Image 1: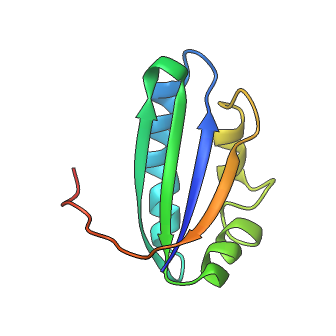
Image 2: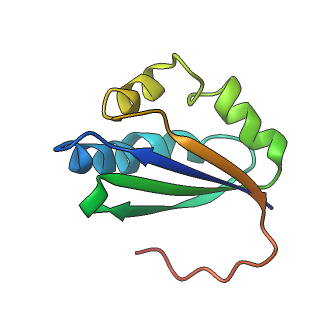
Length: 105
């Protein structure tokens, strides 16, 4: 399993909108993509930051979502989140060695 950890610095006052957008639009778009396994959305309110860990069956499926899918640069969905950010997100990709995830909140 492949994981992408992305740090999204959000503009002040836009954190709730970014969370709503992620839950209502980004997550459903990802769920429709081949190889998508789910995600965790973490929030650091004091620093206006979202951190997403997205799980994919392969790196190729993650790459497709980011380069040609609904999350590619310039896509409508990506533009909606980009206007809420204070700077470019940072991304780290890793392979999952072990996963023991709790039930969805």
